[in-house]
Picture 1 (cartoon, rainbow, N blue to C red):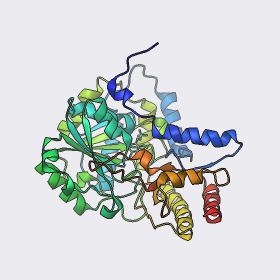
Picture 2: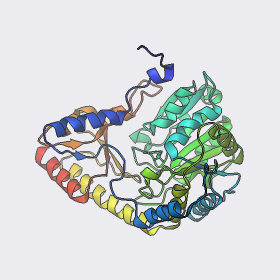
Picture 3: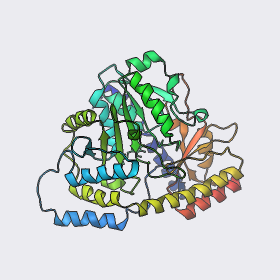
Picture 4: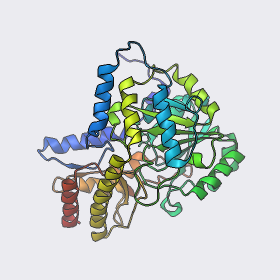
Length: 392
Ligand SMILES: Cc1ncc(COP(=O)(O)O)c(C=O)c1O
């Protein structure tokens, strides 16, 4: 049957990682197991003490019924304590924090809080796709600002025409950035905040997914600069290897969090208590996060040293478990990724152009890049480095 499909859905290209999955399946059909740097889903297990907390919660929680819509008090208290400890930011657990089913849905649904059909929202590219998708599905139009190497992958907010910034309702930021690994200084955040306020823009900051995965200075929260007009999105998926638990939170300006809660009441019915209980112990422990950082750093060093040896430009990320590598001279990111997928190399990465949009000047800032997610094991990363050295 020919079913009607909504305009935003029919305008949506296949999810880029579905394309990567297809390419992996093609290699597997040839009996080749590729080394997969494609999707950023941690392959290391959730730490035992977190799993045990979830199991205990399931065994002991005899209460029937839906969980709290906005998060259990002890979960919100743990999130608030984490923000205070990590960034010196005080958030009121009742008014300024609400639980989410992970950041993907929260970032997507946030578009429905403020966007009316025809509205403009400024969205950085490359960046997490749910920012633009939420805007589109709410009937708005993303105005794409590029994250370019020459600006250290920071939003060049001065380049956004005043008339666009004045009419836009909101701007998304997404630092530490997936995929570029960039993380702004506090000074940049101050200037950015002043600029956004001068245009009356709500700032929605998808900042909490990789904020604990860094290799030099600890990344900042924009909430260290100000709370008014700012809402942030946090996730335990990558910090604690908890992608399967679907848990995170929003935190910031009480009015914005209140609007988010009103919207969420219409979307779902809270987060399973076992995930909230597991998240409490996960947020309280920093040791396992420090070990994860070390492991990612080791993998990053191995891969970057191979890129250096084959003459590729140095692309050293500040944070996240991605490497946003520039392709060899004369090759686009797609060319490079395709060459890596040849059966004798069989390394999977994501072409930058697939996860970037045409910016407002008609260019794709991801064109000459590829993204490597440091998910393979240490041994596989070493194999990949050897393959790169052999074939380039
Ligand atoms: C930047 C960023 N934000 C949000 C998310 C969503 O994370 P989750 O829905 O697992 O909490 C991801 C996942 O990859 C991400 O990369």
